[in-house]
Image (cartoon, rainbow, N blue to C red; front, side, top):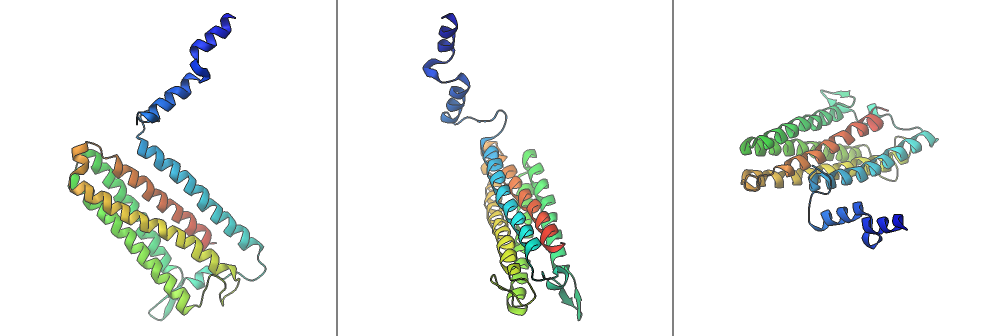
Length: 232
């Protein structure tokens, strides 16, 4: 009887203390995770869900490529770029990868300067990161144009082998390119706020770090796409 009375006192209304504290934190707009900004926590949750989507795409691609009976196009030939009359395998893809990986460096520096309170350096580095991203998307658009109008690749088929090649390529690289485009827009918006001193007045540069998390994720996903799609 005493034990039952103790339980009722510890958990009024039948709701555990831990759940009531969690509900109170959410309702009071507090940081839900101890010492973690709520925006950063939500970004991590979003990136986790996006990881599942990209993983499903890549696993489906590997399964399809392993099971098709038609010959799969050779990436070294399909993605070769003719320079000086000589085809150079994967040269455009290598430049795209270098540009995107370099953008992670400028983004990391922007976050560093943001927490130092250097408004000008943070904004300029974020703009540089956005320019790297825009360059990547532009080169990807050139790659798509070459494949569609020169090579005759379509989502439903291509003249170089397995019909599934086109659908896999346009879906995976297109979905990633959409992420990069959204990231470029987000970086420019945050950079403009940094330049105007918005985060100085708030005394919080977490938005720069949150944008950096998204951008590093996009770069990491490209490494896997590059390895599985272009090198395999």
